[in-house]
Image (tube, rainbow, N blue to C red; front, top):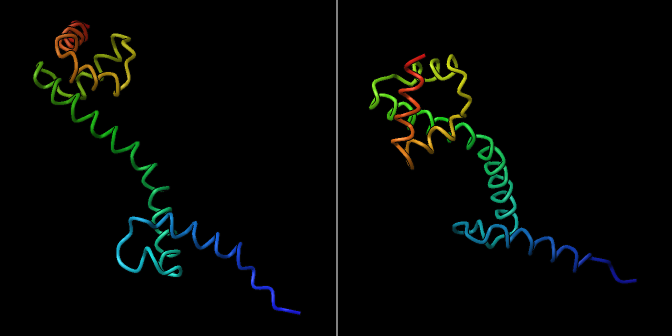
Length: 116
């Protein structure tokens, strides 16, 4: 009886790993063992950084809102406090988009928040 080597399934599995590591550098994209390690690291980084991206965007939005608020005579914290006090419920993403796309609307929002 010949020895069963599981040729096709193993070949498919290896090919899938090598396809995932297509853009990797050096032996990391053409030797299976190195490619497998490289793939595991890459997938781990992708998983972690999907979560980090949320914080990165929040920081970006806060920076944009702060710059626009200071141009209108308030700091970021003063603006957010006055928006909350005047019961204007806009999230940071929308506020940051307003600062970039329609600064005059943002200035009107700041002035209405200042009055309260």
